[in-house]
Length: 303
View (cartoon, rainbow, N blue to C red):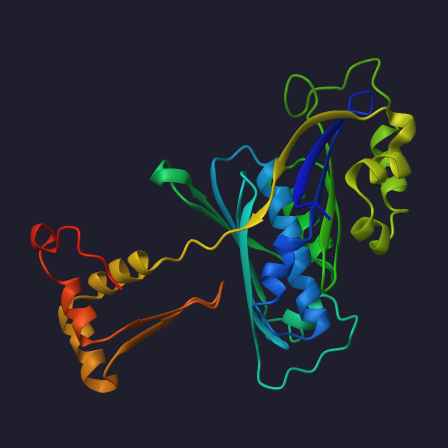
């Protein structure tokens, strides 16, 4: 399976279509996190959804889907951007028990205390970050996010998501805004039943078809009568932003006193990236080098 996001237009129906397929990029995540199948698959659906939403929102920056759960899964986090880069992680409670087909609500909102947060961080610090709370309306990843999109973007949006241990995929349909903005009547030649029709067609897709068929095959399977037009395509990849240099900068922000306190207690500083499972270790010599003035540090490289 190719790691790509494809966008199409059903011009006569006035509907935008996005299809994301993840193979190796999703397996990069799977290999880094041991989890029950249901918990893993919901993370894959969140990853596919994040990439679809990143491409559909008119936003230059990073989208983060974060869920603090009160069930078998205590945390889900997916970060993505419009360029197709993403990373994802999850945390499980001790000895998590979940049914093989457990949906999102059972995993993270079992007692009604789950919190789902969507954050938009503009690229390069341009503009203010936005954070919105997603109500748990529905049990699946797709239905919860559909309700969120309806409330926040006020654009009719539907999602179909699927994932297993080797691939993840998603289909997004979004009704184009009426010409003239919200509240304007649609053109006289518009098909009044088009939005309902394409939803009913998409409802016939199975999880296996979504995971195994190429985007062009999905389009032919669902919308061959709608004459879809290709818009654009972009590669998707697992990309973790952690580096030793970033960790060093974080430690410098803690300050010399705090760093020395950790060293006194533990003898070294260990930092673990929850997304890619990379481990960074700073011994006393490394830590001392963090606070050498920039001019003296020059081109020294942390090892």
